[in-house]
Length: 498
Image 1: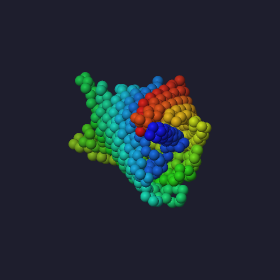
Image 2: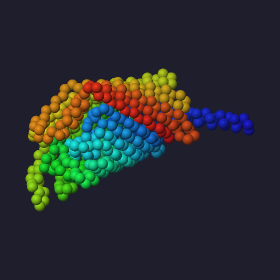
Image 3: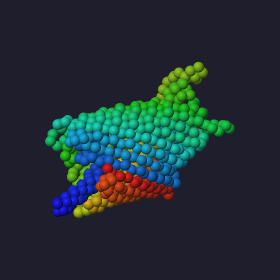
Image 4: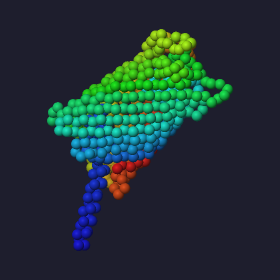
């Protein structure tokens, strides 16, 4: 009996050790830039059923800081402090289905915001409300995501939903309080077209809304608010104290996917999206004064191999802004006409290659990337134009050291931003010269030459009796820009995998 107990104990220990080793191996796969690359085909939720072979979960608390001596974009701030908690999970439900989800909370303080009192600057640009004061902004946001995918013989299908809400505010004049909501739903299917590939399609809808309210507590006067129109232009007629606005937008999107069933082979994706958004001023009986219409097209083609990949990606966006013209509004506001003076186009291309090597306990990966981004903004009357093309080569290195129970992951990358061409032309600068300094500063910073160095390290310790692993992760980056400007950032996470 004693020998049987000893043998049973030894078998139990060996089984537990093998389980820990397998968990560490699965974690290494998820942290690999080559094996678990974020392919665009996973925008189709039907393909999520076969993305991971095992179930896992992750929860982490993260603290981040980023600052610079000058803002890259004045409207988004010069520095921020961020604290967040995020939990995500991917669970297999048998051999042919999976469910996944995420929940997150963020609290951020952004400093040095100028010429913008509206949340989600890039979402609503150029139609923000601005003033000459600016300052510090506080933001809290919540995110919830859930998805489900099922495969039956030669057909896979899935659906995914996401909801995010946020409030952003300031406690000194001017005092904006912005409430925003994102809601996304998408569904997709994928069909086996051969022994090696699946072809699929997906479609989705995204809703965005923002309610903005700007108040003043100073009894001695209010600050002038401007309804911006792009390239330092404003809607002159409505400048004053109109600080209540509603932004409402909807996006319809879809795409086609080609995916290798065994993970190796040709992979491709095409996508298209149509977005429309409207800005209304509550103080004008909710009269709409601006509209945004935007088309976005994109695609990716890749050759995936067991130890590497090469890929090409391209995206094009065309955003157009409409200004509505009203009568004198003595009794009510009636629209007389509408013009479309603003346009912004962006063309981006990426070429990337990655390779992985394994020697005993060590795994090494290298990634070489070249990005090209060309952007152009125009305003019709007065004639204004801002355009630039930047080339961004990047080299990334990853090293993993795996023991039976622990895993160390280290990353190092170097990125160069090089401007190829640029242009800024402003007709009638005296028409409204107050925001011109911010426009010139943005132009200089976005087109500046820059070197960015990023380093990170993560250490996972196996704790099979409590959780799969306990880990600590730290990331740091430093950017040196021409003109002796610089930026630096750091974030630290403490988390567990389950």
